[in-house]
Picture 1 (cartoon, rainbow, N blue to C red):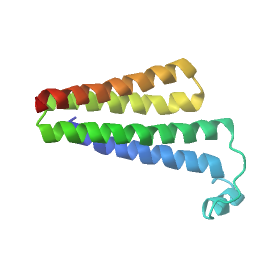
Picture 2 (picture 1 turned 90 degrees about the vertical axis):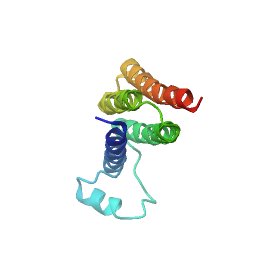
Picture 3 (picture 1 turned 135 degrees about the horizontal axis):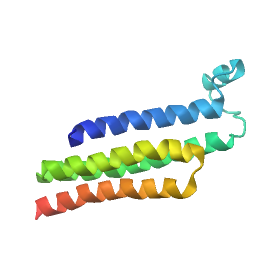
Picture 4 (picture 1 turned 45 degrees about the vertical axis):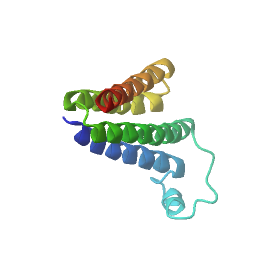
Length: 134
């Protein structure tokens, strides 16, 4: 799949992560949680460990999505090699897709390794942008 498809999939993944975090935090599957989710959320209960991990994972995804999008935009504007962009985007997306359930499960070192693989994907794109801009 090309880089733009991977970007669109990363946006969808980000949305799923944010919604999962919100659902776990508000406990929307309960009657009280449904009303809490529809409120201003001024009085949220303490998050469960998995809800707190989901929230941190979602925030981390949004931070990395910003870097991914900026790198991809720079690379596209510089006319970078499409194959390198697709590779970097695929590395980023698939690492981030695997990262989410691993983080939710609380698997420490694998989570960090998957985060690092996602950063490598951004690095591939960034290097392609730099090479094309020269």
